[in-house]
Length: 242
Image (tube, rainbow, N blue to C red; front, top):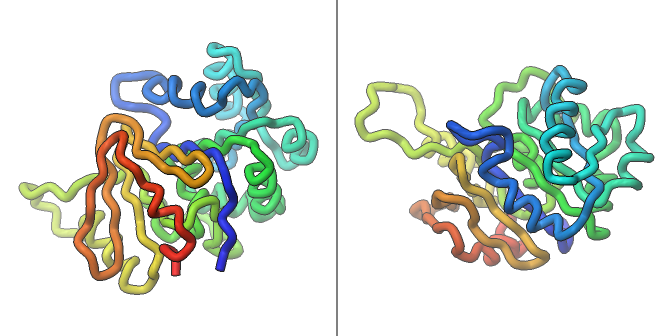
């Protein structure tokens, strides 16, 4: 059984809400969970142009007084030791995980989080906080060594979750159907996080945040919604993933 660390986490569905700028919808929450921490490592590996992605994050966090360094495979030890918090940006989850695996960074980040560093991730960055990336929405444009991720929480995450539309003429699987297929083969529950919502974890307490409810999928059970401000701490029990 995986030992899930006591941790401070902010798991965001998305980094940009429609009609707003980068991180505008969640910056207040970011500053609150940082709680005075000033040194942030940004992980840009989910996009191909890491330099531009890192510069974008550095400029946004500079606006709120947070010093940011972009993690690269050439400065990992120095940056990991320096950082008080991590923000893992969105993009392609398979590319992100493959790069972290190749740099032997999964264990390093997990250890730093267990020692008190704050972990924040949006979209793909939220996906890899789960035990695996099996519930990502992304295409496998590259092949990581395994689907195993950082496992900061015992449940799976599906960012950008969308309700099935009753009026659609689309004949492919809905998101709900795809997650039901996952649960035919896997026991860990899945939390669908719509855009504008997030999960905040403080050690053994988890809460729904943002403006929209999340949806919990469990094997052989009807999906359950929980609304902003409601508790999710029951999902932090290691038994939920077995």
